[in-house]
Image (cartoon, rainbow, N blue to C red):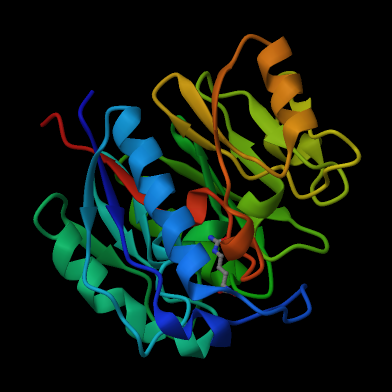
Length: 257
Ligand code: CIR
C-alpha cells in the first residue's frame, strides 16, 4: 500500500476557530504550527507521502481537512460542512482529490462533516451531531451504494464529531469513549474503551499497522499497547484547544493504483 496524506497548514486565524463544546482559550499559532509539522513528520515516518495543500487564512478551521471529504478507494465524496464558516474550505480539496479519484458531492441543503464518518471495511457510520444531518447521511448512503458500501447512523453525546468518540484500529476493532457513543451502534467485536480518566482519547489515527495516539492520553495508549497495537505518539495539545484531533488534520488515500 502506498499512502498519500493530504494536509493543510494551520492558518494564523486559528484563534478564531469554531468552538462547540470547549471554552475559548488562547491558542499559540507558532506552537500549533510546530505541532502540526511534527504530525506531518510522524505520518512520513509511517511511510506516507505528505502533500500540503495551500493555506486558507480566511478559513480559521481549514487545517482540519478531514471534514471536507470522505475518501474511499473508489471515489472521494466532497462534504457540505455543517458550519457555514467552513463551506469555503471544500473547493481546493475537491480540485486536489480530482487528480486521484472520481469526485462526488453532498448537495444542499443537507450537511455532513468528514469527522462524523467512521469507516470499517465496507460499512460506514455517520454521527448525528450538530454538524451532520440524517439527510446528509442518507445522501452519502445513496452515493456509495453503487460501490457496495452500507451507511448507518450513530447517536453521539457531548462531543463535536463521531470520530471524537470512536476510531477504527488497524484490524477494524474500535477504540471508543462509552460516555459519548454506544458500542452496540456499531455491531462492534470486542471494542476497546478509552481509559475513564481520558474521555477525549477516542480519536486516534490508524496508519498501516500503527496507531498514532495523542500525548494527552497515555493511559488509553497503554491499553492499546497491552492489546498488541503498535503506537506512535504526537503532541497535538494546541489544536485540541480548537476541538481538533489526530484524524482531523489529514485525508489519507491509498495511491498504489
Ligand atoms: C470545528 O469546530 O469545526 C473545528 N474547530 C474543529 C474541527 C475538528 N475536526 C474534526 O474533528 N474532524
